[in-house]
Image 1 (tube, one colour):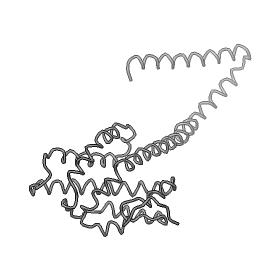
Image 2 (cartoon, one colour; image 1 turned 180 degrees about the horizontal axis):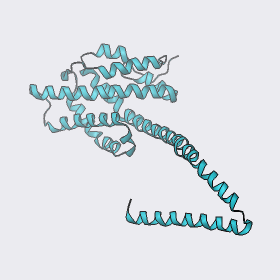
Image 3 (spheres, one colour; image 1 turned 90 degrees about the vertical axis):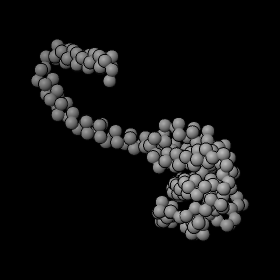
Image 4 (cartoon, helix red, strand yellow; image 1 turned 120 degrees about the horizontal axis):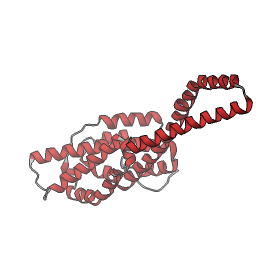
Length: 249
């Protein structure tokens, strides 16, 4: 707090005390009843701890809970924009490089009938995933071009102050940005040296794993709050044999 702020706070406090004393003085001058002035003054002071409890703890907590819900809603909007614009297409692009594709598709084939237990199971699987990566199954030049085209979008997301409250998603953005920087730093992605290939395999594995874990949480949120968006995800997600926007049944 600056000196100017402390000065105004002191003036405000002094003004409120003087006003209270003046009002009590006016009350005494009119009614000449010091007993009741003192009686109600003690009652007000005795009730003060309860006021602190009600206002400072209960009401403040309710306001804080409402603010957290509002922030959670804003974060989910940002995460939804990320997966619509970049996250889901990137999952489809990196999936062939994973050497456990059949298992991943089996565990992450989200269906309309999924319940909370299914999402919990899928989330545990995504967080624990640590499979080998085969870069020969991915067009690294196309991946590089794709990520370079989305760099501005990712940097804009990182500028969003609300993301400071979501450490996991921020880590995901950094992992994807790092993969983009590693690819951009290499003039040629053909015939990589073994050390470079191993390094890029680790970057791809990290980015895919974090993408997968956040995607499961995001889709679970859609199932609860936005069933019409969840319906499209069920038809279009990359962990099925033939994604299609066509609604069936």
